[in-house]
Every structure is written in structure tokens, then in C-alpha cells.
Figure 1 (tube, one colour):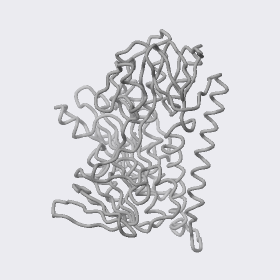
Figure 2 (cartoon, helix red, strand yellow):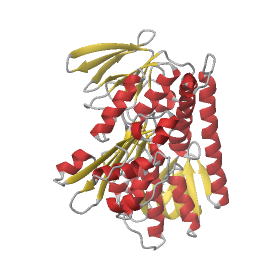
Figure 3 (cartoon, helix red, strand yellow):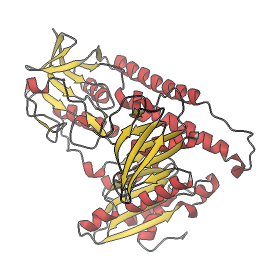
Figure 4 (cartoon, rainbow, N blue to C red):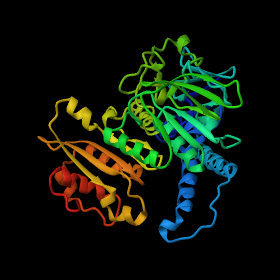
Length: 458
């Protein structure tokens, strides 16, 4: 039986990052993977979807070339080539993880892994032991009883990335990050897209003003949006799909070629040995403490299988914290109130901290600042004037409570707010930090200036 210091079950952005940090700390480490290194994020999620979205963005630029004083005759797209490029990007990233495993002297055990009592892991019948076993098996597309996925006419995100043929009509059920990203991609490619959202607004976790702006932008681009609506049944017996949608006004039947179910994710905790070991689970989440220890000594869990936010960067941060604690380092529990969220449709959405509604629900007296990109020189020059930056400060203490952005490139800008909040900066300190001109990031400074009645360009 092979013996390790640490075995990591799963090689997604939680698992492989955890393994690398463990190796850096001197642990003899192995990672178990049943499919491709990099997990869902690198192979079927974060990375290949961004490749698809980039193709859509470039195609949008080509279609609007005249807005930039350029002429492009008959801009066309090759759907198969777009998908092929996306898969190539994913393969390249997976090979990159393979290189990192070799560089850091981490053993890769290929196969389906299960945890066993006595600090053991079984992989396709062969047993391995370790002092510490970290579960990082991730999640998959969640299915609703009223919307069973057949992989053909009712699909999840994996099938949406590799369709053989571009659909003429698509219904997207759910308007979280996955739903709106695919809605943008397929709409840009020429598919007629309808979004059906159960809650009263799209991107429901975002600030109300951000949701309203995205809805305006999407409708302007031709995406149909139905909020406070629920798909109660689907009929796939014909050549396409008929979806019965319940709304406040009654029932409506929508017809499409394909329905994309984007109603969230479900943790991969079945059949991995949790019951045999006695690891406590609440619904589909493994319960852990602040350092990702389960109730059974020597067994840990990170990422989508735990109750925290199901985001790649969260899984990575949790894994690093977990192994540093195992190594005896002094570590502080992760601040889940300062985790940035990013959605990569166009316009992009990024946020961190409290929304305006959440701050007011907590009874905090707030200062609100907002700067529209329509007043930004860089946004005007780039032809990307949709959106704004909104900041929320505690009026009494000056604490930066939240930052909410919608517009071009904002997923690259949100880190300023994350770092500022981590360092407990105040609004006046942001104002005195000189921002370069002309940039999109100036909008952060201008929004803060607006909150303190010092805005220049409004």
C-alpha cells in the first residue's frame, strides 16, 4: 500500500491548488482524478466558457465595425470552429496542470476514488493511505424534477459547450452566472434566446441596480427575459421542445430547439465513502470547521462540497488555508464576506460585500456613490458606455461595505475593492490614491467621490 502525507480527492481548482501548496510545504502528496486534471473549472467551466465568450465578443465587434470607422464585409462565424477553439484552450490548461503536478513532484492517481476508514483512499480497487485526506470532488449541474436533463433537448452546461449544431431557438432556465453567460454567448452567435427566471430579477444575488442594468442591456441586444416565472414541464416528444411556463399572468408555452437548465449546482458527495467513514453531511454539503476539518480526524473537505460559496477562487483559497493549518502555520479563517463574484457576459458583472438593500436591512446609515461609464473617457473611446460602478460606505465609520460594477472589463477591476476592504481602507484614502487617466478603473475613484459629494466628472 502506497503511503502519503496528504491525498487530495479531486483535481479541480480546489484540489490541484491544494496539492501544490501541500507539496511546497514539504508533504508527500498525491491527487486522485477520475477524468481530466483541472476538474470542471478548467475542462467544462470557468476556462472554456470564457473562450466561448471571447469569440462572441470578437464577433460582436466585427458586426459593429462601422461604429469604429472600419468596414468588414459580411461578418460570419463558424460555430464548430468556435467550439473547437474553446476545447483547445481547455486542453491546454489541463496540460498545464499536468506540468505543475510533475514540477511539484505530486503523484497523480487516475481513477474513481473513495474515502475509507483508517485514513485510506480506494481508487478502482487499489488502496492508498495518508495522514490527511482532503475531499475536493466539486459539483455538477443540478436537475429540477420538472426539468430532467436528457443531454439532447434539455441540457446542462457541459452539453451547452459542445453542441454539434447551433440551435435557432434556446430557452435558458435560470439567470445566475451560468445562465446569463450562455444566454449572451448564444444570442451573440445569432440564436434566439429567452431567459426564464423564478425570482423577480435576473442575476438575483446582485445589487438591484446592477440587475436592472443587465436586463436593459440584454433586452437591447434582443434577449427575451421572463422573471417571476417557472418552467413547470417540458415536452420533448416533437422535433423540438415545448416548455410550459407559469407566470403571474398565467401559463405560457414556449417553443425552442433546446432548453438549457442553469438552475445551480449539486455537490458530488454520493458514492465517495462518506457514510463508511462517518463524515457528517447536511443535505448535500460536508460540514467542516473554519479550517475545513470534518468531524472525523484526518479527513477534510474544501470547495463546492462544503457550505461556502461555490466559486473556483474560494475552493483554491480554502485548500491553501487547509494545508497551511495542517503544516502548523498560523492562519486566519477565510472572510466569506469579502469574496468577489464575477459574471462574464457582456456587459460583465462584478461585486463584493453588501448590496445597498443588505446594508439598509442591517440598519446601517450608508453613503452611496455611483459613476456611470457613459461619463468615462476610456469607456467612450472603447465604445463600451453601458454600466456603472456603485460603492457603499458606512456613513459613520467610513467602512467600505460593498462595491458593485457592471460594464466592460469590470471583472478585472473588482480586485481593487477586495484589497481595499481587506486593508480596511476608507473612502477618503481611495480618493487620495491617484488613479490613471484614461482608464475604466477611474470610475471606482469617481464613484467614491460621488459618495462624499466630491465628484468631478458628473
